[in-house]
Image (cartoon, rainbow, N blue to C red; front, side, top):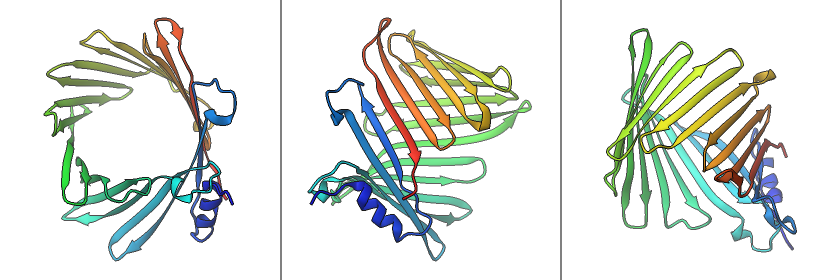
Length: 263
């Protein structure tokens, strides 16, 4: 008998009060002879409390009918969070499919103005730190400054992002040994925001966000000779469209549509 993740997660959520599976359907390249171009995915999560520690867990699975249940899960994850010495601390582990011998780990610690994030991976014998980032925010000249250094352990690559925000204007500068970029985000009026980005290697992108009724929005990002991206948020729906560019030619279409679905 063939089963699908839709049926599997419907059973799981029925025994967990308050859980709401989310269905996501992605269309790759937009041209297919059958439904093979669809990639339906269902995600589900729940939570619990153990003493002073909050526990969250979930699964993301393919919604395709199959007789091999073990092939359905795309990833399984769990997260624990709590307070430690005045800092909010959390650790999240994610396993790919049903392979529990290797996990990706995210560790976060934060207080009111500072935060530290660590990306790591764990195998059966060792834990390896992959990337470390930190964030510090402070007030300056009536605005807010955020400093965000980042370091990749394996390659030794490092950069820093400095952001200054005041009223309806935000300036973000990213600097590394190889490249520098600056983004200026301007809230033109209540409905429109524009944000150009220029890099030292000559690349340029332009983001335009239009606020719609009901708290919805449409964001368009143009990166010449690379892509045009659209993100439309409409209540419970989120649709993203990616159009790769070769010069002025559109070379494909990638579409993703998500909505919370209660089973």
